[in-house]
Image (cartoon, rainbow, N blue to C red; front, side, top):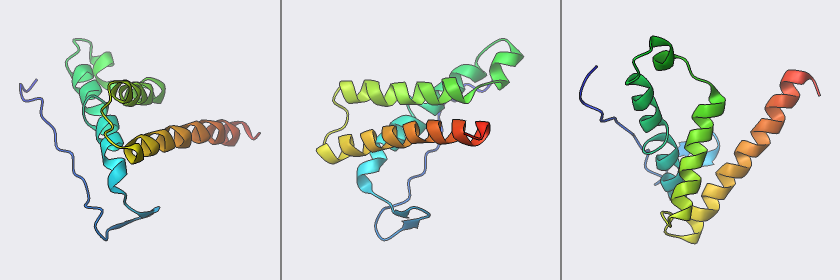
Length: 112
């Protein structure tokens, strides 16, 4: 295994850029960075890659992967990482979006 544990995290500038959902918002960057990079998915995948067991290195479930990233967001919120009211609002908006997706996913898969 490589000793280098760094990763690349690209952020599209919100200045005039468009996403499929509309305009990017600078206030979302903090929550997204925590969720996707460090201590979120990046740290979790590095930890998995360092496991002796080949099964633990390659198998994962969205429950634990997304749960870890959400836990990281909550922990950083408790520690005061989100500097502005807008950043805290968007972190909560992302939490609400995930809760809605759980209900939708279960409904789609069960036909309810």
